[in-house]
Amino acid sequence: MEKLFVSGDEAVALAVRQAKPHVIAAYPITPQTIVVERLADYVEDGSLNSEYLYVESEHSAMSAVIGSAAMGARSFTATSSQGLLYMVEGLHYASGSRFPIVMMNANRSLAAPWNIYGDQRDSLSQLESGWIQLYVENVQEAFDTTIQAYKIAENADVMLPVMVNLDGFVLTHTYEPLIMTDQETVDKYIPFARYSNAMNLDDPVNTCITAGPTYNTEFRWQQQLATLKAAEVVDSADKEFGELFGRSYGGMVEAYRCDDAEVILVTIGSVTGTARVVCDAYRAAGKKVGLLKLRCARPFPTEKIAAIVKNAKAVGVLERDISFGFEGAVFSDLNSALKQQNVNVPTYNYVGGLGGRSISKENIAEIFDALLSGKAEKPLEFINLRRDINYGA
Amino acid sequence: MIEIRWHGRGGQGAFTAARLLGNAVVFDGKNALAFPSFGPERRGAPVLAFTRIDSEKINDRSDVVECDCAVVLDETLLGAPVKAGLKPGAKVIINTTKSPEAFDFSDCPGCQVITVDATGLALKILGRPITNVPMLGALTAVADVTSLDSIYKAIDSQLAEKIRAKNKALLDETYKTVKEAL
Image (cartoon, rainbow over all chains, first blue to last red; front, side, top):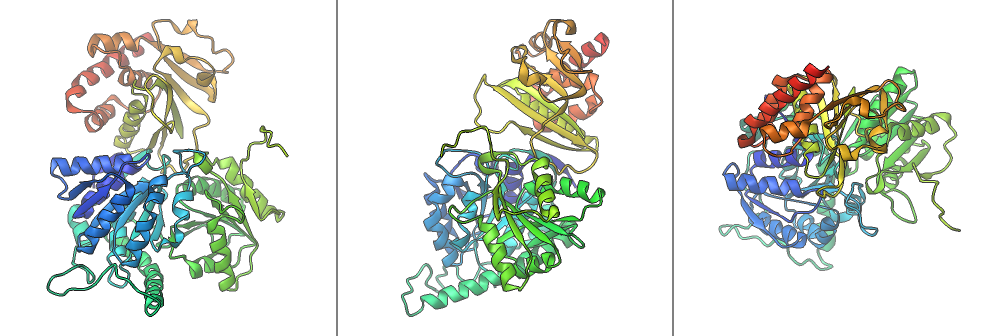
């Protein structure tokens, strides 16, 4: 199969072209811009037969794909950061209406202070929007996961929108080898079929409806069941992808060298790659460390995580976000999951990589050292915090 | 792991050079990452670009801290950022009309300075002072990173068709000039 050398943004655009959405609506924002530029090129040169809507804002982009998905059209959009926040009203309309929209989000920090660089505060602030959230580690996984996203979203038992998250710049703007999939096999993997809640003159149904106190709870209960069901589908979509294309990623989570690990570090997105390098070096030195890569943040892989970490002596969560006044969002979820599953392992939260700061191998080694020492004390630590600044009193 | 750092100014194509090299080594059957110093793009501002090369899959996504080669597309960028983070024995390749002796890298142990008039060659062949492809030719002449054949293929897949032939000629000319001077 052809091997290209492309950026994460270009890989997403190539994957979307193979998924053949009927409608694309998007507004450009750094570091997502290249995705929508390439898709516009493909529509222009005829290699992608989509209706491309040039909209004036992210709110309109989301509204447009809600409209197209309501008509039963396969739909795609992409955004980042402030753009995602501007879409928030629509995010809930899309998930509550059970429209299988696929969106790429380039993870970028939120203002203020203004910042165009990567962290995950944008998407992690939207865990409650009802979208399935997937996070990828490299360019190949970005490509493969974008195709998998349609398989998950359009599953008849799921019918939910899916957000595919790429770390801004570190993934969106880094060029790497990419093995393409062949179109014929992609067509077989994600054949398009009209879904049951699409508007249809022969069988009219009501979508985006009002539901007062009489039925609202029942809508939400069904939405919860469907989102929980999506966990199985994230796994099976990845497994089937592996059977067809020879690459798979563990579905909801990947446990890397966790079997006999004394300490396990949970990572999300591209930092997993750097952490693998440190993990391998520590293993070579006889230190029992492992990684748990969280690929899906909603639904949350409660049982899987508990099973992987239950024999560890300490678990760290390294994340590029903070819920001010408390802790990282993923850390809260992990603690709740472990409590639910009666797993009692000490857990520690490491917040770093904010606003684009690189997370170095040394930063990760320090976390492993603290966890291995049994002397990690602080429940939450901002890693790599500058000490050369006068913070005042 | 070989790490190359490219120094240029916005608009000079330093990142294109980083990308062409990355793509070339993929044609060699190796792995590569190519990325710019992240952030807003401003014409004329100093920019960095990086190429990581390895026979194995590259997982490390942290910043490049130390490099095996620093390629300087614009002589006016010489200074602390070029001298920072050079591995012992690193090669520094500078686009200049001066000889290597004109540059003092005595504070960088074992490092080797190579010079080439890439601007002159680019003006001769392209008619424009675009120095990314010739500096890639110079790098290939002094460091065992890839072959001219693989760079031709990278040019074919990354550059617009109308500029390919002249850039290949410029690549060859710079490679030859640097090889002869060694």
